[in-house]
Length: 423
Image 1 (cartoon, rainbow, N blue to C red):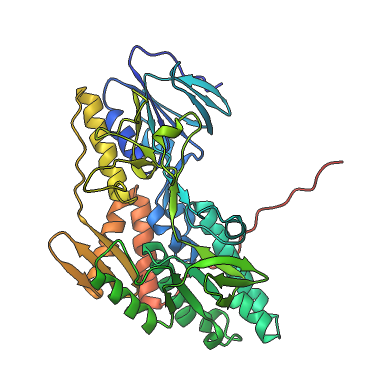
Image 2: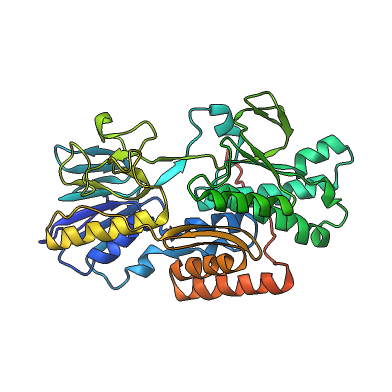
């Protein structure tokens, strides 16, 4: 059982401790509510820097923060590590893998996961980057394959170990490609001098006609130029449809040799069983009204990446980015605290993406910039957004050390121990 004590205050159950759920919990924990925060992990993870963990630029501990540390002085906040299995809306009950819990108001903030658009082959044979575990898995795969390449004499077989394909030209794909290109340029000659780095090919495959489709055309062109200067093969207008025998296959029949394929081509909402089909869209996002209340489910709300607030201006809802999640969490908190129903209005402060050292693009509300100053702004915004003073200091130190030395000391392969079965 979840063993939540009874309370005289209304019980608000929040499912998910990402940007949206955590921000909501922090806002309402100071008021007369009993807050129950459910998540599969006991920590909050800073998703925008997952790719740096995967590239061995940061340790996992520097971008996560324990939930109990955040709320350790809030007696009205109850944290439970559980997997939600169903919602019984009629009885205001949630079923989890550790028992059931009743709620007065429910907030679904389960975020998003990688969208493979129904392609099971690609789902089974590519790496996603939507969790810390996936980041570590990718890091291990890259480093392990480099070790394997050193012991492989056959050229074609070695290419499979050292070449990498990234599918998706959004911010995640662009940032990954830039980080890999810098690893090829600065790290391989030091750690893997026996390998000819000229053999390493990094491909960024985008189905659209330009990179960063959610940003300005100027930002997309600048990102493409930066990546090409770093030696990345940018393939536009190519849709990946299959992966077979170590080859990425595009819809027009082209083949690219690579054992590692990173899928960054789309996301879908993490819905929960019990939400009516009429309230869900094809990409698994939950339809909400202008107050973030789920359609056909009174007293149930959805915020962040999993929520879709459609309008004439935004027929597909708000972009699935951290700023939307943070603002929706804050706005819902105000409505709950004041017991009001003010509609949500998103304030777009702009978008950014970094391509590597001294290279970034930024589309801000009043102006656009590319290059060094955009890169400095990207560093500042992400550093400021991290939770915990220690994390800020560690990340800042890592970035400074990397900038000065063109190196890091985090390239270790950590494999979980496999316990033998007791007969």
